[in-house]
Image (cartoon, rainbow, N blue to C red; front, side, top):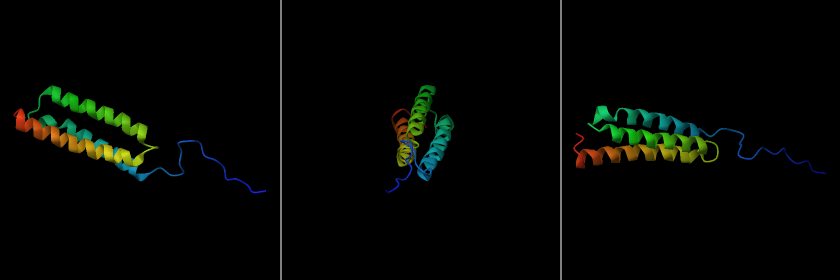
Length: 98
């Protein structure tokens, strides 16, 4: 009789992925980038509030993906940083946030 290895609970792995931790560090860095937006450019309060709302949504999604999709957490933080750059450049160009 062959003995089967013990099964793990669903959604669990033996080791935590370093990609998920790198993504969370990226989300923390993007938070500070979003927070200093009024210092970098003359952005209105509502633009900063929308950026912070986008960050909170991304943080919640990153927490949901932490175990199941660890690389996606890193991609999320990089995408959020590029999104911030696009918003700041568009605001400076079209709304005069210089």
